[in-house]
Length: 307
Image 1 (tube, rainbow, N blue to C red):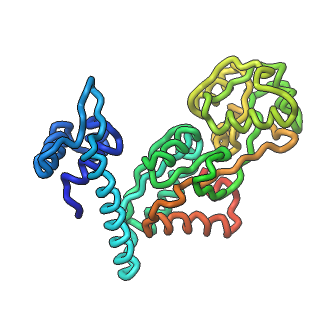
Image 2 (cartoon, rainbow, N blue to C red):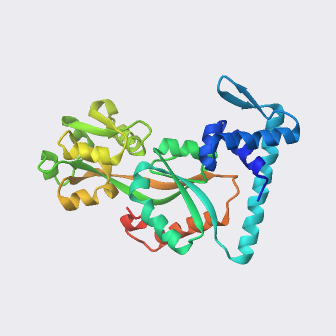
């Protein structure tokens, strides 16, 4: 609804990249450049400084960006007000989710949500928990869903459910014969872990600290960037690991992995993260309420977020 030139300029200014803006807007880079030049011709001044393949806003560009931000905020509030009157729930949401949540939990939940609200368009960005929090902080996404505690007090954090972590081993491993495993029992075996910034790794580090241990006491043999890679390495007999119980249902059914509870029990929150001051579209409120209803029904954890 807003001036297309302004929308394109605003996206470029937000990302400080014509290439990334083109990808985000599903446009060609020459088309993005043309729209920005059209706006510069309208104001008869440069809005970007372009030096050494980098761009920055000129003073005029900063002014236009500030007003554009206010304009799009007003447009959002206007559309929201009208939709509240008409009862329509539509629009687009950009959600960022950590790898575990994106792969094992959100697909079915978002599928159920889309079935109820078919006019809503949802874009999903996947990163580790640290990356998702950064995207929320930078206003790159509307909502983050993470698997680790969030320390930024300027963000709204709402826990939607708790997730239990367990030790996973290949079949027949000595630890698999135990009813419970203490984290110190893992020090005798090669350990497969997630990368730095992963929510799972952060929770394990906190658990070690509570037990007056440190990560260096684990015999880390591999660092891998996804739950599937970790499971594959453990299945291949390359070590043991700690993973969300939500991620191993298939492997337990097939008998390719075994799981043993930790003692004391190791849990972490799955939480929504969003900006405090950012205007919330009605579709965002509907999505948040949709998940809250799941929680209130007392669903088991796998069904709650469709693990």
